[in-house]
Each structure stands twice: as C-alpha cells, then as structure tokens.
Image (tube, rainbow, N blue to C red; front, side):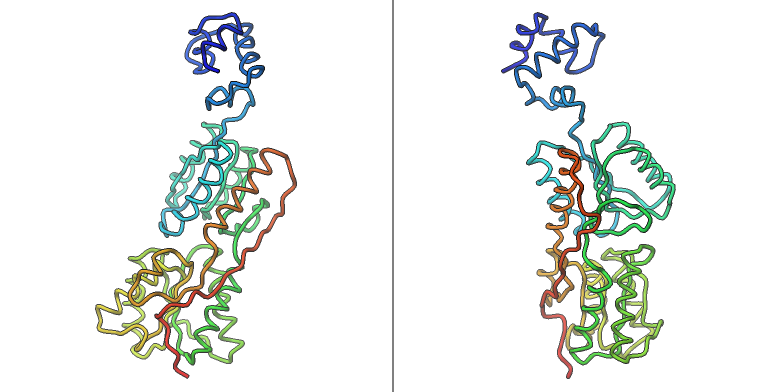
Length: 331
C-alpha cells in the first residue's frame, strides 16, 4: 500500500495526498477528509506522519535529562528508546543545564512539537518548570528521581536505603572514618546523605561534617572532591562516592597522590554503570538496575498513552552491592 493507492482510493491526485500528509499547501477540508478516510480504511499507517494524523498523536516522547552523569543517563536513554521504538514511538531528547532559561527553552520545544508524553530524569531547582509541565496535560513519568510535590508515576530505587547499605558495607569491613563525596542540590543526593548519616548513627559512629565534600556527579567533580578531602584528612579509612563517575575521578586523584586503592583507602561507588567494571582496581559499587528503570518507566508511559490504564504512583526497584576490588576488609 503506497501513496498512489491512497490517491486512487480517495479519488484525488498524488499531489493532494502528499500535501495532506506533509501539510505543505492548502487543501480543502473535503479533500483532506477523503484522504484521511482512505488512509484509515486501508490501514496505511506505516508512514509516521500519516499514522499521527489518523490517530491524532505525534508518536513522539520527550526525554528530559540533566547535563551531568552522562554514562548513567546514556544507559537509561538506550533502554527507554529501545522500549518505545518497539511500539513505534520516537524519542526527542533534551539535555538541559540547571538554569531557568535553558530548561524553559526545552520545555517549550517539547510542547511545540506536541509530544504525547514525557519521561523526566532531570530534577529542576525551579518549581515554575513543573507548573509549566502540568499545564501541558500530557502523561509524565519520572525515571530514577523523586520530585516532591509532583504527583506523577515514578520508577526508582530507595536511595536512602541504598546509601545506608553502602555505608554499612564499609562499616562491616571495619572502616570508621568514612568520607562522603556527595551529589549536592537534588533530593536524590539529599536522600543518600540521609542514608549515610543514619547508618553511622545506628553503628554508633559519630558524624563529622568535615568528611563531607560536595560533587556534581561527574568525573571532574569526583577528582576535585577527593583532592579536597585528602588535603583535610590524611588518615581516611574509606571514601563513599555517590556516583560511579565521581568514584572514578576520585580514584585518579588518589593514584596521582601515590595512594593505593584499596590498601590505603577503600573506595565505594554508586550506580553500577559499565565504567565500574573497567577501573583499576575494579570498582565496588551500590548498583541500581539502570536499564530496567528506563524500561519500566517507558512501559508505564505506554500504558498511560495506549490504554488509559491506572499505573502505580511509585515503583521501587531493588539495588545490590556489586563487588569489585576497591574495598579492603580491615577487621
């Protein structure tokens, strides 16, 4: 079935069908309806534009990701894209900086392209962005994040519990002076900090805020944070970096200063990205099911789009401790 068949069935020219499909020139409403009726009757929906016109959908999903932790977000994006493309949806990716003007540009872009739904992986510091998203009246699913006050389905791990488990892993290995390279400014990072503090408290280890160093979920920020910690503390037992990219940067900083990981300092990461298996030594990390989070978020959005099915507001995925060689038992 091709454009010539549609033209013959509708009793119009090929040029008219082309104009309707591409919306390039004026076509009377009568002729337009003839073409659309023929498309629907004969099942000519292989073409993305024609399919959109018949079903009044764009078959495009907006994916908003932050400009940090690139390896983590690439893994989720690949999973989201694969799941959605299996249902013939395209993905429009917006990689945003955490500034109001930059975020607004991308939100406006998604609305102008009339996306059918949005998977949101970026937590804005600007609440008006969420007000704008709500006005769009399209389904939204959060992947890997929690945005307090935004009542939409979300798929993530329990970040507080995961950080507690990571800290407890280091405590069980006999470490007591455990520094934390944080991911500052976001609720996910706040939950992980709270988990670190709670694990120390339950183990009877005093919290020392000089052992905290802010990072930005990037290799560079992990490198800088490790240097800052080592300048303050020459007797660290362990460092818990709240992303694997920061952990890899921290490992490089330690190497440059002649510090052996794990014999001098144990190092624990967070996320379980592919990079963790290729550091030297191989990184021990709190691993979250990254690809499964993306797949599940896409599946929930598809249900909302295609069946109006009520989906759970919160889906918690399991985390694990992925063993490597960067932590040493000091008991």
